[in-house]
Image (tube, rainbow, N blue to C red):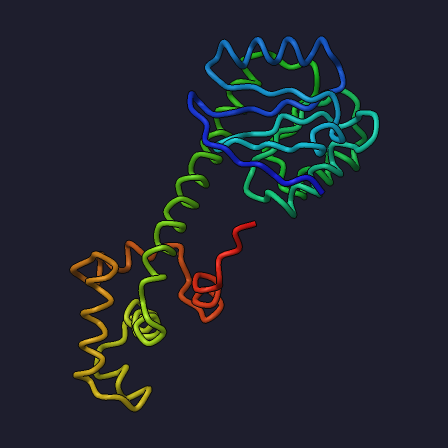
Length: 225
């Protein structure tokens, strides 16, 4: 399986167009480029999968019926390797069961050809905003993980109790330690994470669940690949 490549993107974002009709690919590429998007085009799902690139943030504009892999089957595959990338279907030849499956698999929208350029642009704008929000959240989580890596196992544990609302005394009673020791760990946690108050700590860790699995993940040996 080719390595999935993610790259930084500028402009409004990047739209990956996958459609077997050459004239449609040309017209979509022209329209979207003029609208301010970076665009890459593929004539089939199979060609895309040979060297898949999904610059961030991006949206996939996907046809349903193409030679080889169907659009809905590519969507199912992408759920495994790039679940956060929004997919918009644009198809003129789809069965009702394929449309239903595409929506159940999380498609942002299913546009039936022909559609107006404005309908397409409005749909992509909404999908791209979703991609941007996800990209920002992913970036935030990566930043938080890098900070959490600085914590010792004990500090990580204390941090997990703190954000759940436990006081130093409560934590000490739960694990049989001393409240003064917990207070010291708490101070180290706040210092290493660069926050001064509990609300700041909670805000920083929003969207990040402090579990033993996360601690293992962030402290796993780095694979240089």
